[in-house]
Figure (cartoon, rainbow, N blue to C red):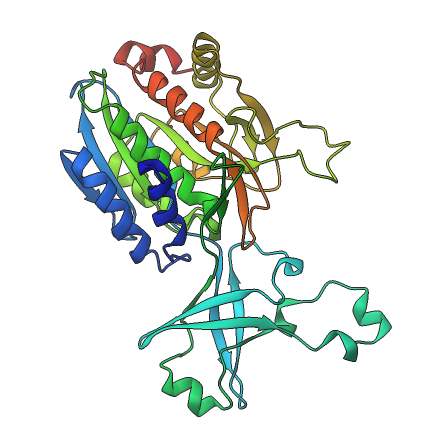
Length: 357
């Protein structure tokens, strides 16, 4: 396991649902601190590392998001089961039988998401999507008192339990929270690539919080950094699995990083998009394009900051996002790293002046 894979494992396996990102932020700071002249934090929990190339040049924000989808304990039943609400978007088909980690003041407790047994379901129940309110978490307790003795209380975070692993001899990275620990790792690695390198700007590389519950931390981090240009670093969807045969977009895992033309919250800045695509052509990197109207990224807040901040979203085609186990290609990450690093080196004052509409 090399340095890059180890970082992905560390970040993926760290726990941090929206509003509870401290563990991930600590890991992130450990990777950022040796590469920066200063660490900045907003009051919501976002973090960036600053590296100055030209103090008179534009301020460039490169940010993933620390949080992952998960749950919150909202009720304890008399016989010791936990009811919960989702933090971020879940499809209930992805939940039953999976392990979770309930984080309490007395430590972590493993749990299993359950529901009424299959053999007890009526015909109509078997053919419908199960609501989250019908599910529960079994932590091995037999009463409310036992749950309380474990230190579990309402409001505690619940995190998917899944170890990081690889497939195809390390070519594919797999595990929980690749959305968006991969974006966090990309911010770190761009900063690493710029060590000892000149660049005509000041870089702020890091991650926001609470993206999965409405891009809530992106505004705070943008207010802290005051960026002139921003890149949201996030995952995209891979359409190379069964069921997407007639889908209007083609984005395949392992065939290059992806760039969002638009999503539900933002239209990518046209001239910044063109710079990315022109640079990719110079480097011989294939960039896959998507327009994702069913979701969005922190770019939705970045581009609205101040008088407007030219923003695009760059990411990696990923299978099975918003589940316990996602899959992405290391090659897509490495090409995104090469591309973003090269683009950053072109972002000088003249370019900023030219891209303003």
